[in-house]
Length: 431
Ligand SMILES: Cc1cc2nc3c(=O)[nH]c(=O)nc-3n(C[C@H](O)[C@H](O)[C@H](O)COP(=O)(O)OP(=O)(O)OC[C@H]3O[C@@H](n4cnc5c(N)ncnc54)[C@H](O)[C@@H]3O)c2cc1C
Image (cartoon, rainbow, N blue to C red):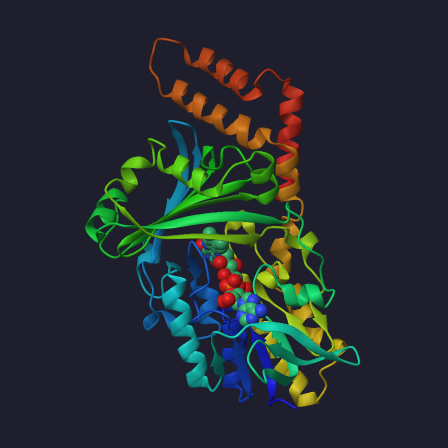
C-alpha cells in the first residue's frame, strides 16, 4: 500500500493552496499534488485578487506577498466601435493599508502561497498528474498518480483541479460541461514602463486601476473584456461563452487583436510589447451548474466546483473561501474520526451560509437571460453610445428633441412596451 496522509489536495491553485494551508496550520498531514512545473505555472487570471478572503487565510499577507498594484479605481465601460460610455469609482481609501484588491501574477503569487503552505507543514509535489481517485466500497481512499508506485492514500481527497475537473467527472459528480457553462478567455501581458502606465491611467506611483468592458469588446457576445494595470505590464483580455464563440466562428486570439485595435483602447497600450499569452476556460454556469460537492472521503472546491461569479469577475476569492471551508470541515471530521459524506457535507452548509452561494444564487439566471437576449449587448450598448454622442453634441437641436431621439435610439424600432420588458428581464436576472 502507498503512503497514507490525512488529506490529499489535487491542484495547487489558490483554492487547493488555501485548503492545504489551513489544514497544515492545524497540524494535519497534508500533501498537495500539482501537475504543473511549479504552483502558478499553469494558472491563468486577469488577475484581481481580493484582500478580504486572502486575509482570512493568512492575515496581513499583503505585507509580504508578491503583489503588483493596489487597485484604487474600478471602471465599467460600455464599449462601442469608436466610442465608450463610462462609469466607475476611484477611492483614495483604497490607496492606504490594508488596501482593497490587488493585481497579481499567479505565476509569482501561487509560488509564494505554496511556500507558506510548506512552512505550515504541507508537502507539495509538482510535475505529477493525478490520473484517478482510488475508490474502495464507494469511498474515495486515495489517488493514483502518473509516478511509478504513485498510489497515495488519505482519509480525505480534496479536488481542486480547476475548471475541467476530470476527477469529479469520473466520480460521476458532474457530466461534461455544456458549451454554455464555460467561457473561453484569452489574455496577454503587455510590457510597458511603470511611469507610462501611471500617466495613461492617471495614477499615483504604484497605484492601479481596472477596466471591465462590455459590448464591442466581445463583438456583442455574452462576456467581458478587461484591462488591468500591473507594475510594468498591462493585462488585457476577453472572454465569452464558448457556445457563442463556436456559433459565430470567432477565434479567441482574433477577438483579442480586434480589441487592441479599438481606437479607444489603442492609446492605452501603444508602444507596449507582448510578453505572455494565455488561453483558459472559466466556469460560467453559476448556481445551476454546481456539481455534487461532497462524497464519502472527497470534497470539490474552487473552479472544479463551478464557484465563479462571472458578473463580478470573482473566482479566486470564491475558490479560497471554499478551500477554507473544506479545510475547516475536514479538521472537524478528523476530530470526530468520521470522513463519510454526511460528516463532510458540513462544507456545503458553510458555503450555503456564506456570500459564495448567496451571490451565485442571486445571478443564477443572468447568463442564460443574456444569452437569450443578445440585444442587451448588440443593441443597447451601441444605442447608449449613440445617445451619449448626441447629448454631448451642441448643434442647435433642442434638448427636448434630443430626449425624444434618445428614446427612439434606445427602442431601436421596437415598442416602448418591449423596451420595458427588456428592462424587466435584466432587473429580474440581476435582482
Ligand atoms: C482570463 C481569466 C481572467 C480571470 N480573472 C480573474 C480575476 O481578475 N479575479 C478573480 O478572482 N478570478 C479571475 N479569474 C478566475 C480565477 O482564475 C479562477 O477562479 C481561479 O484561478 C480558481 O482557482 P482554482 O485553484 O480553483 O483553480 P486553478 O487555479 O485552475 O488551479 C487548478 C490546479 O490544478 C492543477 N491540476 C489540474 N488537474 C490536475 C491533476 N489531474 N493532477 C494534478 N494537478 C492538476 C492545475 O495544474 C492547476 O494548477 C480569471 C480566469 C481567467 C481564465
